[in-house]
Image: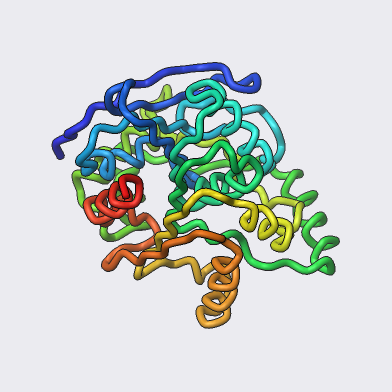
Length: 295
């Protein structure tokens, strides 16, 4: 697979962590910040960046405990830390500017919550498959805390792989649409060879622990309602969000209810794509993104 646009890496200190930040494009071009999803890395955006027609300075970090960004060495990861990291990242690269923000999945949930907390810092907002989490009830709290305490007694671990080709095969198992060339490219960034010749996923195993905190959907909706930036909300036709959001019909009603809290939103669906829509249809997605940013 030919990489059309080469990225460059930079390491900066953010909130006491060494953050790996990937850049594409001319530093003087308009900035577009991209945040990846859970168990992913910044290089995941390579294919859609390759399809952008305009010159953009794309800035994409590996989020804390993922990729080449250091881990804080904690038992659990707290969602507000991602907001604080993004706030520090924007202060570093675009102080006092309203920026273009794009996020996928977990990264999308970060950017849309941030856009309600710091509305003055966001010019335009792009949400790729960021639906929030399932509704929870207060009665679930004792069981959730108990599960978390039980998991803390076990040392979390991520599976290792015998070769980079095995890593690529694992990526294709999760996403059958992923071509051999794209899977090979991603495998080199998603994992790294260890001292004994195996391949380890570049992620802190602590990410696998259940959060003890319930998802307070109405608090999140209050943040979404405070967003002032225009938002492009993009879903995949074959998304598997229903696996964690509940029965499809009920989840659709809840997702549409949440969209209703956003003041200025344009929705789009990309056909023949799953949750990793930026891998499956990068050209279609790039056209949507640029049309939205340039209109």
